[in-house]
Image (cartoon, rainbow, N blue to C red; front, side, top):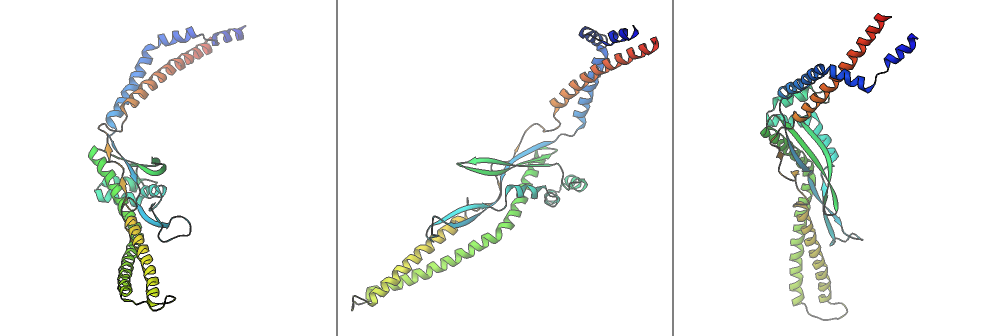
Length: 307
């Protein structure tokens, strides 16, 4: 009989639950207010941080390759090849050495100290992610760069300093390829000048040559040499044009931001609305749980006393 009575007492209807909440509304309201107060304290105690956003394209260096079959010298294709892949660039910017150089350039001692204290060797001031954008019919990998700072100006300067430092690194990496193309360009110009001089001499020689034998004459030999020099002159001009194109933008260009660095007027953190919502909902849930747990503990104590 007692066992059946305990089972009936353990069964609580929805009406009973609402009744418990109605009786403990002051507790629920008080704990909810406490949660909101904690959220407000967090909002005013957490330092404000602004976020600068930039979409970065890695540095490119021009490359010349034969166009079509046979590798004809006169048919050349110029393309811009990334100095390093965006994924490699992101990993480079995450290193402590790279971020320390940027912090030193800015004179940001706090950032440098955060990097030194971090277990991973980098601070949370930078957020980097590889994204893909569509340029025409091609997918171009870009880098989403986000830099945080205590003020809008500090965040913007940090993002610009990161891009500038990356530009120096990529310029050093691209220097051998650019120097080689410049050397090839100088050689091609010398060859063109030599071929043009020879062509001019052959042209003068043709005008003064006399025809003695149709099968093999001096004029035929000069004509053959002139055709070869004309072809050489054309090829060298094509090579010079291709090298000049490869050395100029857009084939060869430094690291750049697709658009100017953007910084919102409002701080990115703390997120006031989110903290207030968490404080309100969290306080409400804790208050409700408190009422139910307190009521269950009270009933259990009364049951033990009755036994």
